Image 1 (cartoon, rainbow, N blue to C red):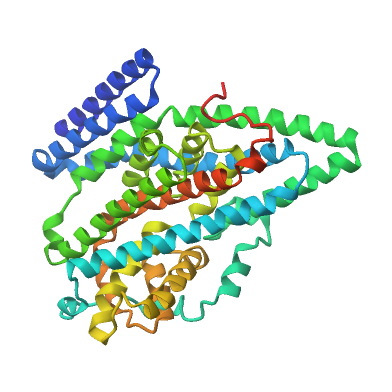
Image 2: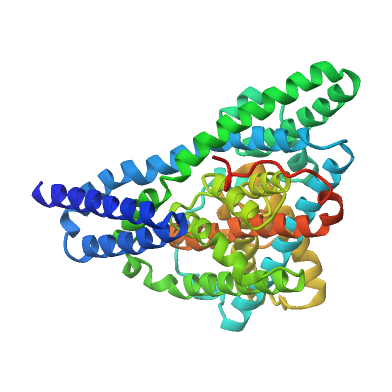
Length: 450
């Protein structure tokens, strides 16, 4: 009990220190970096010094860490709805909304196919082979496989369209966020029509939307101000729970995943450079978001932070909201791109298939794109994305069940890459649509809303 109280007191003292630093520097990024370091040190001390009490201590830390994640999820829905609606409210017509959405989704699908190729190439170069894991037992259930048995693109696309917005507002579906975005775009187009056909009523709606946006932004800023303390608690939990010795036989696969993720981040940097953006400035802007995604393993909870980071980088508010929202459930570079592609590269040689042949790539990459939409359709992250891809290619799926054991370790890197992929799609779409969006009046962003 004494050790638990001592660590709780230590966390409170460290939180006060971070708060004082934040007050003096007025830099949230600086506070987050310091909190990450402190959280890692506390977590390691728990792992090596107070292992017997670590579970109880982390349970108390999770009140802050998981509570912060829950608050971000709480404000994500009103933020998405009002930010997109407010941005559309400032448009003169609805002609560009469809093009904007298609450009963002197109960017996501291109990025996830590139990620798939990077994962495939990494595993092939490292020489990973599925036969090395033949002695291990798969933990897949018949229900897991049945969820992907009847996956088809028309059904997946149809599942994205909401039927009850109130149901989606509760997050009851795995694609609730996408449903909310689609409903908001529909509401926004209708709003523009009202402003054209009934100007007086349209002005009243417009004024109300602007007032609600200011209110929601205030609420979101309050939650974002808690980022250093939430990240510190989450980091302590992550570093106190590392048990690599339990996965000794799977370290090769874990290493391949992390190397492939790193390679994809380098590819993202090159794409930024080729598109005329500054990679150094970009990663400096999004680093706190990536760190949070890494420790929280939640793309949905990262939405408010991802929107903020994109806006700071100059992405239009509407594009930032759509990209971050869609990216939480589809086009995920880590879960739907790299993860299944590594398994494909491991299985293909055992079936006498050259995974780098052009013919095979033409079959695999569309399957990766299909799987990235399938993640939204069936839920379950990388596991179900891998099931979809392997099933589409008529590959055995037992390997997926073997790697479920190391999901938490691999998922941290995957989630960070997923979130970066969603932000990259926003940056690229903003660049592509620059001529169309430059004429639009920018809406109030989270970074400057007071």
